Each structure stands twice: as structure tokens, then as C-alpha cells.
Amino acid sequence: MKSRPTMSSTSSPNRRGFLSRSLSAGLAASSIAIPRYVSASTLGLGGAVAPSDRITVGGIGIGRRGTYDLGCFLEQPDVQFVAVADIKETQRTAIKGRVDAHHNNSDCDTYRDFRDVLAREDIDSVLIATGPNWHATAACHAARAGKDIYCEKPCTKNIEQSLQLAETMRRTGVIFQAGTQRRNLPHFEFACMLARTGRLGKLHTVHAQPAGMKTKMSGWLPEQELPPIEEVDWNMYLGPAAYRPYNKSWLDGFNFEKGGGLTGGGVLEWGSHCVDLCQWAAGADSTAAVTYHAPKDGRIVAEYPSGVELVIRDDGWLPLGSCPVRFEGETGWIETGDSGKFVLSSPELLAGREVEEIGGYPATFHVRDFLDSVKTRSQPRANAEAACYAHITCHAANVAAYLGRDVQLDPATYEFIDDAEANRLRSEAFREPWQI
Image 1: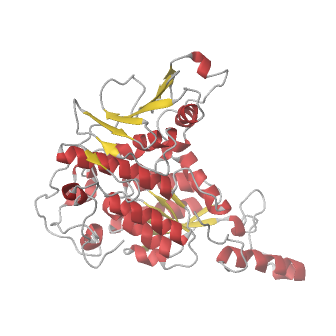
Image 2: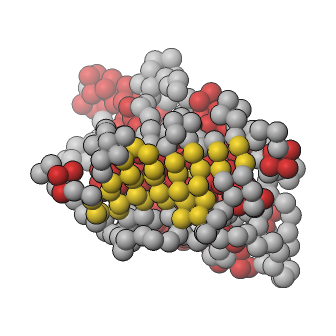
Image 3: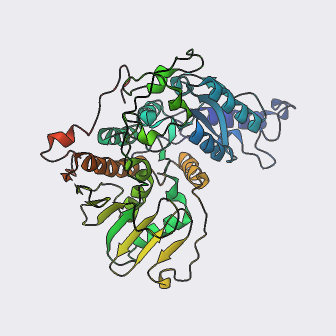
């Protein structure tokens, strides 16, 4: 992926570079150039991060999951969170209160329209944690505005959106990190590296647990009285999704996995984590599985161009926590999950190496990976290309499940081969005026 100019590039003036140059010039000219009231932390003294090294971040759609992500960002000393856009007035106010308390100021601005955040030249990066119906559209708008992006999963609703997302990030050169934080957890990384480096012998099968492969409901809840737009911007909430009447349940954590039309659903919700890990283990970050078999006995089996088989299943797992994966080679296997523990075919695979057990699935390491990539302009682990193909694999598995039959993807175009019915499920219409 082509990188955009780094933040220190003289061809691309920016706020941090301006601050750094101005401060240096002032110091060289005279000590009088520095007013006495400027604090040590403002100047980057006493262990604080200098303004030139800070990453300014704005939030878009900071609800329940986004509030957790926000905490991970605020833990980082080089982050300055400066704005939040949300369709709910109560949420905007709550996030501002938390951010202002953290920074010990009142500088966090609030907006109802996310485009107001994107219009600000002083914002380097955005955290996108809206509902899934907005992820790809908001991310592409942010990329065209020159913002680096941390986007919650699932990042897309269908195959076509996945391809468009990757192409937009490639064309604009921004840094993109999908919120698939397990790529930056030590035990999952260790398992994937065993598979990738041949320690298991020639890899032949990878297994993923998508937590139920839930079928989608219609998404039509009973209509309720619509609040004033200042309190809840329902039209903005729906965004590019098909219209449906207002119901407060959508704003109070109604399960997106079951919300027809607002998410990809099915395999995608948890598959964007566990299938993503299988892709990484199989060295398939730049491709998707191409052959998908009809669900049988609660399993969907697919094959990659390399011949590696992907088994998407809910049964038969060892008690290793949620989101388990298993990688099998000709000479060994490993299975792990969110418990932080793993089981291997042989203790020799450890080769004296200890892997730190981190229970649960914290995103702190993943956020740090993103921020480091923003500074270095190198690709993070869950970059747009990797996310694109992992999501395509999930979407295609959903198509096979929905149609109840085998489907075949063309690896050059990611269209279904000689299958008009399946191809109708590759994309969907956008509600005007929104486009990706």
C-alpha cells in the first residue's frame, strides 16, 4: 500500500509540524518568546509528550463499545482526544465529560454530524465505533478527508463494501486499523506464528468458531414516537441503510447480529475475529477462501486457493474461552481462545518459550499498534487489506448459508462464478444521499 507523506514532510504542512517549528524558533530567538504561564507538560517536559508528538483524535459514534475503545485511547500518553460526534445528545455529553476530566480541561467539542469532525484540520485520526451500517461509509469519508482510522468491526456489510473499503484506503494512503484486537494478543499471535512458520508442518486445516452463526431477523421493530432531532438524529443513525421506523431499542443495545439490514450478520459478527485469525495463520491476508460448501451438521467448510481448508463450526471445541481457533498441520496442531491458554499436540512446540496469558480480549495493544503506525506510516496488523479479505470470506460463507448450497468465488474479481442469485447478495443499494 502506498503511504501518504509523513507528518514531518515539508510538502504537507500540518499543525504538529507548525507547533514544533514555531517552538524551536522561539527558543532560539529569546527566552522571552516563551511566556511564563506555559506549563512543562505543554512543552513536553517532565516526561509529558510534546505537542509535536501528540496524535489528535476525534470520535465518531461512541456508544457502548466505543466507550471501551475510548478508554484504551485515553490510556496512551501521546493521544489528545478533542472531539466527538454522536447522534445521541446524552452520549455526546457523557463522552465530553469523560474526555474533559481526563485532560483536565473543557476542550472536547461535540457534534451531531460526523462530517464536522472530519472537516477539522487539527484532527489527525478518528475512532469509528458507530453501528455496523455506518462503518465502511464513515471510514471512506474519513479517508478522503485525510484522517487515519481505527474502525470497529465488522467493518463492512457485504463483499462489495469490503473491496471498496480496501481500495479507498489504498488510494488515499491513510492508516487503517480494523478493531479485530486479537491479532495483537500474545497467545493468538503465538498460535498464528506456529502455523505461518511451518512449526506445525504443512498447514492443511484452520478452524474458527463464529459463536452461533446467528440468522438475521427482519429488523422491523414497532414504531415509537420520534424524539427531537437535537436529542436523537434518527435519520443520521440510519445513514445509508434502508429506512425503518424509530424504536428506542436500536439505541439501547438491540443486538446488531440479529438486525437485518444494519449489519452483515451470521458468520461475520464473530467471524471478523476468528476467521480473521485463520486468514492470518494461513498466510491469506491478501486473498479470501474461494470455494464454500453448503452448511452441514452445523459447519461451513471452505477452501483457500492454497488448498488450506477453513472449517467454521460451533461444536467440538476445547474449554479455552470464547472465539477459539485451531490450526492443524501435517506434524502438529494448536488450539487457543480468549482464556489466554492453549493446548498443543506436543510440548516441544513451545521450545522453552513462555507466552504471557492475558485473559479476555483487551484492545490496548491493538490501539497502541495503530498509534505507532500513524507515526511511522507502516501498516498495522489489522490493516485494510487484511480486513477486506477476512470480511469477504465471512460474507461469502453467509451467502452459502443463506442459499443453502455451494458457491464459488472468482479470486480475480470476487464475484460468484456463473451464479446470478449469489451475486445479488454481493452488494446492496444505499439510501440517498449516502454513498461509500
